[in-house]
Amino acid sequence: MAAEWKELLPASDLRPGNVLEISHEGVDLLVFRTQSGTLRAMDAYCPHMRNYIPNGIREGQGLGSLLDGEELICPFHNWRFDGLGRCTGIPSGQRVPSRIAAGKRIGTSWPLRETLGVIQIGAPTKISA
Image (cartoon, rainbow, N blue to C red; front, side, top):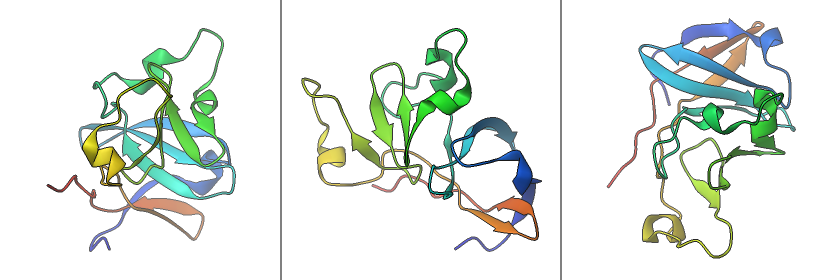
C-alpha cells in the first residue's frame, strides 16, 4: 500500500464510465472510474507498443469510449487492461506474450483512493520481473 497519498482531483470530476488524461509528477496517466465505480490509474502509453492510448480515439468520441465496463481498451490493437497493470484480453489471431498468458503485470499502475470528496494517488506499482 502507498506510504504517501497526494491529492489528485475532486471526486466529482470522475463519474463512473469517465476517463481523464492527467499528468502526475511528469508521467502521463489515464485515470478512470469503471462502470461499477472502481477507481483506476495507469500509464497512458499502451504496454503493447507504447502508443499513446488517447490518440487512437476516433474523431468525435470522448475518452469514455476507451472503457468497456471494467476494462480500458487500447483502440490501436484492441488489447484490454484492468488498470492494475494486467492485460485482460487480446483479440483472437494476435500472439499472446508469455507474461500475459501467465497473468503477470505488463504495465504500471497507481493506487487511488477516495476520501472526503477527493481522489488521492499513491506511489506507482511497477512491473516486476
